[in-house]
Amino acid sequence: MGDGIRFRFDFSLVGESNLRGGDGIAAPDFRKMMALVDDAVDTLAGKHRRGEIGFPDLPFLEKEARAISRDAAALRAKCTHILVLGIGGSALGTKAVHDAVGGAGRPGMALSVGDNVDPDAFFPLLAKLPMKKTAVVAISKSGGTAETNAQLALAIAALKKAVGKRWKERLILITDPSKGVFRRMADAEGLKSYAVPPNVGGRFSVLSPVGLFPLAAAGVRVDRLLAGAAQMEAIFRHTKGTDNPVRFAAAVYAYYLLVKPKAVQVWFTYGAGLSLIAEWWQQLWGESLGKEREGRAPVGQTPARAVGVTDQHSQLQLYQDGPSDKVFTFVRWMTGREKGNVPKAGFAPDMAMLGGRPLRDLFDAEFEGTIGALWSAGRPIVRMEIGKRDEEHVGAFLHFWEWVTAIAGTCAGVDPFDQPGVEEGKRIARALMGEKGTETFRADFEEKVSGIRRAEIRIGEDLPDVSRRRMRGK
Ligand code: PA5
Image (cartoon, rainbow, N blue to C red; front, side):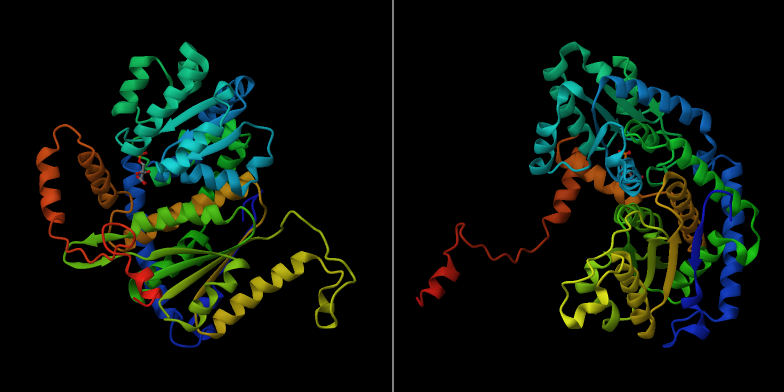
């Protein structure tokens, strides 16, 4: 594999000869899947050539990344904190990369991401930030997301209160280059802004200014992030057949999406900083593949995440003995950071085997043990090991999954780059809040939901408190 990055993708536990219970992939089926993948790659290459999709180009925007890093450094000289406002693809990638590389320990601005309008979360978040020293980055590709607009208005009010007229120096917008509310605002107010390439959708945008600017401000080496993704892009473009990890993975996952459909894919992550990558992947996989299909059954796979070892004591029972409707992806760092041992003495005789050993031995044993247990229950499993917990590897891994998702969606005959369900939800939210021009849409929607038949049991409101009466024996 490329110069600087190291990965181990192990697909042996999905092979028919290696998996009992009938869920393994037989060689002829795998060949068919590879042919389907080849067609999908050709389709995507055509889209890329015609400029319809832009995510494959992002790793090569080093010049833009250098300019972003310079701007971020200038901002760091003025501010200690950065607040990102955005939701979905405008937030998840930043959170994931920051956590994955251990960004909180970097000499950069302290990063907070507000990706919810829950007042009980958002107001305390704003209140705890030192606004005199905080920069706000509001990100919305469309500019039309009600949540981000509401957050932005609140953040502007807080900035004005803290720094008065200088609020404009503290606000950066990241949005479409030519249209939408955010673009109009940036132009009208003369705000610093960055453009999201129009041919890059939200969940494919982490390597665009959407992720690069806040991450650079928080001290993440975004040049290394892109360099890792560029290596993965090169591997994808130049490796043939089954040596190509992207094509191989796409064939395996497309099999469990289309041929032997598994309703759920579970990511079991073992390693600090991986769980938020799983959260980023959940949006990528869920939103790209979960679609209606003309004349065919809808397609999709519920993306679930579990954290090793914690969830071995919570979800594993279901995974091992419950319905066989899942494919598993185990993800870990090849080398963790901490090397500490547990004490030599002080164990009860039954636990003496732990004494003096690296804690990592136990963690690794749990990883292998869980895979072994699920494998012996006949569950299909893919293992992914990431060489190192750094920017290059994380960039490569995210880019790997963007390709696998795009290919799997194309194999399924859906457009992996649209999200009509999400857009409908946004439209409903705006209409219910009284957006001008949506009166008919709102009335139709209200009419539709008026048919909902309630079956509520209320306690402590207008109904008698039945439970208390019963307890008193009345
Ligand atoms: O992937 C997507 O396109 C969506 O999840 C969006 O990222 C999300 O809805 C936010 O949209 P916007 O950036 O336009 O505010």
